[in-house]
Image 1 (spheres, one colour):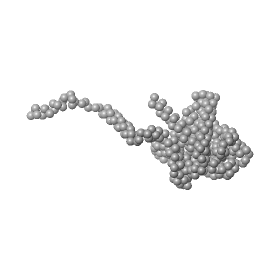
Image 2 (cartoon, rainbow, N blue to C red; image 1 turned 90 degrees about the horizontal axis):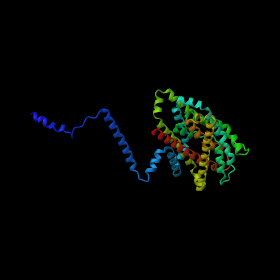
Image 3 (cartoon, one colour; image 1 turned 180 degrees about the vertical axis):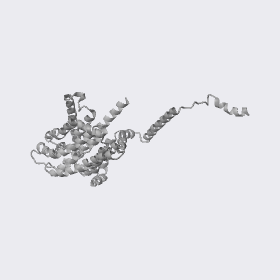
Image 4 (cartoon, rainbow, N blue to C red; image 1 turned 90 degrees about the vertical axis):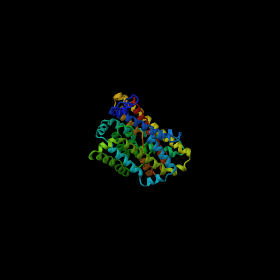
Length: 391
């Protein structure tokens, strides 16, 4: 009986079947590693399902979400403008701006407001660059002769506008810049622009011809689409228990939502401008796109050079202008212009400077170009930051 009981157990004592128990911690780590590997393998399998020529494009789109969304929206608007025109009829652009600033208010920390107050020299120079220094370029731009001449005049008008109402703030947040400073620069430049833009147009472009800006309408629009959502977002963050933690734990998702809302604006603009685009020769449209992109690159170079000069005369690497989040904010916000104010100004001017549609066309192209270029810059900054963390 004893032999019968022991005989089955003898093989179990062999070296081939004996395995020491894995400690619980090691087992959990091993299990975790296997899970991570399986996830990576599943992602690779998903990519492998795509055709090989499409795989690099898919990877690029995934790592450059915002420019991909912008380019995709523009392409879709050119192929089928009906949804974009319907969105324009229901003022989707206005709601997207409201959403962007509501998110900005939700994610705005109180300490960021203090950082924005400390960076007042950066904000002061930004306002000077947006409303005084860069508009001086318009006086030289109008000397360029091109057919149609409205392209040059339209870009000169566009160069006199305040900073972009929504894209600068959204891109600053994606880049990890000083969000509160970007908000302050955007709101103040828009409010001051109501007073300064007519003077700039009259002196730099019109040669004494009076220019009017719908001040009351613009002021009300800024209050409704910018200030009220921003304040509401901040109130929700501070007054609702746990809201701040929820928002801070989902910043990446909110940033992605902000990028989607931002991409709706050029999608709507291209959709409603498609008939005009089809009337103009393709080479002329290409010239408009190139001119808009060149103008934005010039503004980026001007502000980047100005920042270097300001750093050199105000403390070098210890200067407030050299601080990374201030540098990113100043470069992005001060180099952008708003197309919505430009459209309102052109409508008020009537035919003073030429065909309104031709005046607006290069400005829409410039607006799309500036968002795509800046989103690529933001993507480069973020990738470089990730590489530094890995090292």
